Amino acid sequence: MVSLACLTGLALTLNSPMAEAQTAAKEIFGRTPLPSVNPAEVHGFYSKGCISGAVAMPTDGPTWQAMRLERNRRWGHPNLIALVQKLSRDAVSDGWPGLLVGDISQPRGGPMLTGHASHQVGLDADIWLTKMPNRKLTRQERRDTSAISVLKNDTLYVDPNIWTPAHGKLIARAARFDEVERLFVHPGIKKALCETYGSSPQNASWLGKVRPYYGHHYHFHIRMKCPQGSTECRKQDAVPAGSGCDASLDWWFTKEPWTPKPPPKDAKPVKKRVVTLSDLPNSCSAVLREPQPANEQLVTFDASYDPTAALASASPSSAPAAKSAGIGFDWPIPGSRPY
Ligand SMILES: [Zn+2]
Image (cartoon, rainbow, N blue to C red):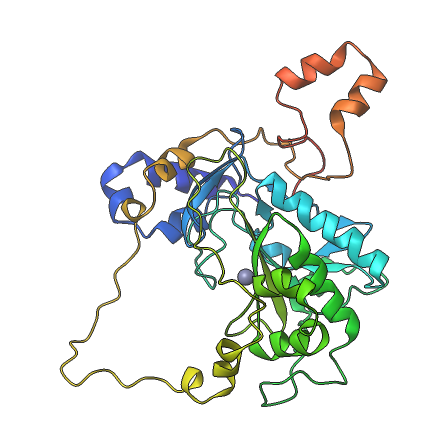
């Protein structure tokens, strides 16, 4: 629940430019409870940026449940929220019983108090590799339930008792979306995908988007491309051509990636510098000052619901009014509160 003290604290922080300049950006963004209501706009890069006009993944849908609600990290660009919802429907048609949705971004993106270097611009989403149960989880279960690793204990390989063809299909579905820039999975998962799909050249382009990386054996990570027209969104370098089922994957099964490198002999101890607002794009300070939704207004987004059409059919004359009031398909839609 958003407490008044919390909002007041934020206002105090922002009222003092001196204090703001020295405060860790994660403290400011991590304690901002609501998004801005400006039009959706991405500012910066996946690991250094923020977002205006984020909308929330609804806590429940017919084909998904959002997890870890207490973290308040289910905010994203409307295109990403729509994409995750589409993936959830497609996955169900493939036989996966529904998505458990993990962290997306904070209400205005930015660095987080804990975890995740990226997830800062509302274009990254974590999807659990655990099937959605056939009942609505309680808030407490969403906090306490752990995802299941698909790896065999203490190995770099998937456990055939846990990993199923349906896991592979789900990741393939996500990677095939044009708007998806890349996915991150554990190297053992990439290997399993290469074994299932790698022999067919027509799978190369989506397989190439599935990038092996540390972690990511409890969940996989979807990264969306910069939305069209988002001029302040910084693109990531393209993934290498080809499926990636090659020597670059084999490297992950050597000792090198898993052995900490000793520091060079003459290395000075590096002091970790605090990331402040001045390290982020200039527009991120402005994003923090953008207006928030009125108290009882929602900010969840259901892509299967077209509010303009609903309003038009209820009362043809009300549709333009709704549009000018900011109610539209690419805008936060009033509804239930995020909590
Ligand atoms: Zn992630």
